[in-house]
Image 1 (cartoon, rainbow, N blue to C red):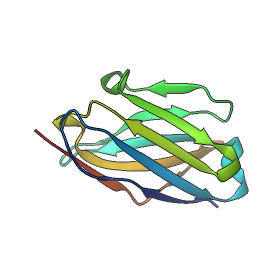
Image 2: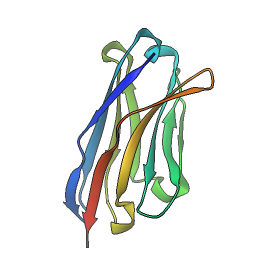
Image 3: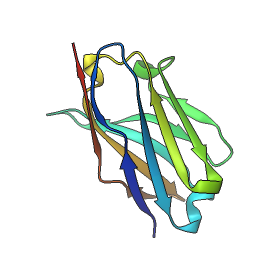
Image 4: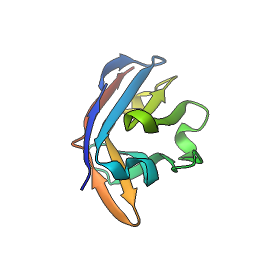
Length: 115
């Protein structure tokens, strides 16, 4: 079992930056693919970025060049650095851990980008 606790959401103006953090409990963190997903009001939950246990990353086209995912295996934490934020980035952001196909989710953190 993995528990994920996210932090770092909030309100920011367009063009600004935020960093999300997700602290995980459970020793499977280091061998899990970690990710961030987001869900805007009235829309489905979409992939933002993932990072494998070996550090390989994958990004949604809409955030490439602006967002960076990273992980600290020693401290069981995954980060999402978000730069050049746009109003369309407004959503609830969810931390995810995928352990051999089993998904665990954080509670979600609201990010609001004002124009």
